[in-house]
Length: 513
Image 1 (cartoon, rainbow, N blue to C red):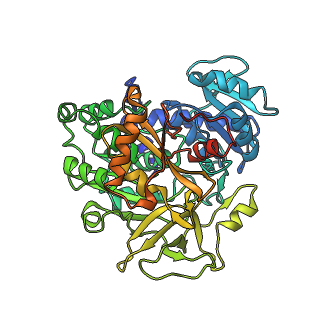
Image 2 (image 1 turned 90 degrees about the vertical axis):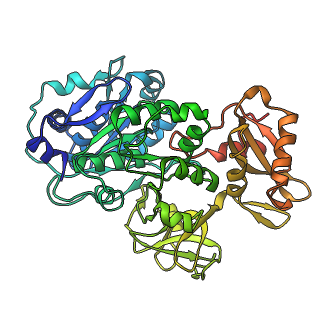
Image 3 (image 1 turned 90 degrees about the horizontal axis):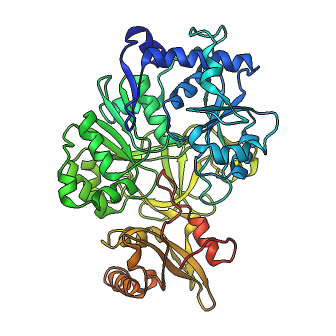
């Protein structure tokens, strides 16, 4: 199945809806606009294996561009709308993009980035400012039929850069014809989450990220309808579930936390009974948060663990999770291995690096050193996480290795501390990092985003200190509580912890009070 086939068999069915504006695009319209975009790319001289970069907020044009590149045999690199002009320049140059397409809402930083680029064709959607040309106008004069030499393309996305400069994850382009092979995420939507062509899928996160883009594209392959939120808001998300009778949705734990912190009367105001299956990933979900979500929405909450690299995936449903609280599931597309620093496989309940064996091949583009570092002597690959397996093969993540704090020779993983602190009613968000300490080497610091900024200060710090004292051993308790009005968290749920940590080590201008 593929949107090309759906355009032939049900051209008038709505493929996707922009939730805020209400603009809808049918499968027939999507196909015609994608064909026009593919003709435009060919007219610019782009051939199989070339790259197009997209720097946009969620827009109805996003899928039209995606499927234009996908049938022209091109790589598409979607760039975070939170990046600076210099960061955009780096990614556009690194992926070798010959075209950059942006949106009018990002005109300011896009114009700055354009001044740094040479030899790149510039287009803008949903309006236009110089030096960009209108993408819609440029494609309008081209045929709505398929190009003469269609070829399957694919995404080439970049890691979020939470622990360093982002790197592109590149895989070989598929062979064969366009739309001949069902995508793996479409098959998971059917096999794991019971999705059908009648499903209505809510995408509450930015489409530039691998998960929202991949899962929603999987739903379009299946022939369902995707409802895209332009921007996440907890109450608005509940409203859309009721309004559009959403059956399937993908979330991150931050979404859950923000919905749970809504007043109870607001949460009860909306009918979410249409939901059949929801799933989450991208960041650790505190056990109490997931318990509350299952109690609220029922045992329809699933979880998976994977990365942009596509080297493996674990999965777990509500029933399994209730029997293995804190687990992210069993290996589904690859075998999970736990290894020590020398690559030796460890037994059950022994903590070490999490590796996937037998998963998909990939490389970090233009970075053979990082590609090699992600693989051990067995050829197994890692995303850099630490964890352990129980006797039944369920995986439990401890934290990212790079975030580990070593205090007085003791290894401390921030995730457990963060999972506790975020459950406090006065905490909206939290990041736990290691800061320099003359005696212990590093000390544990909790950086808090208060639910009410006016409460930031010594009194709240003392309250939180008593809260952790009652729940954590002494070695894990933060020695310092600091406050930030807004933590630098990616819209996909991942926190830019490196920026916070570096502030304490004198490496950035980040401000923590």
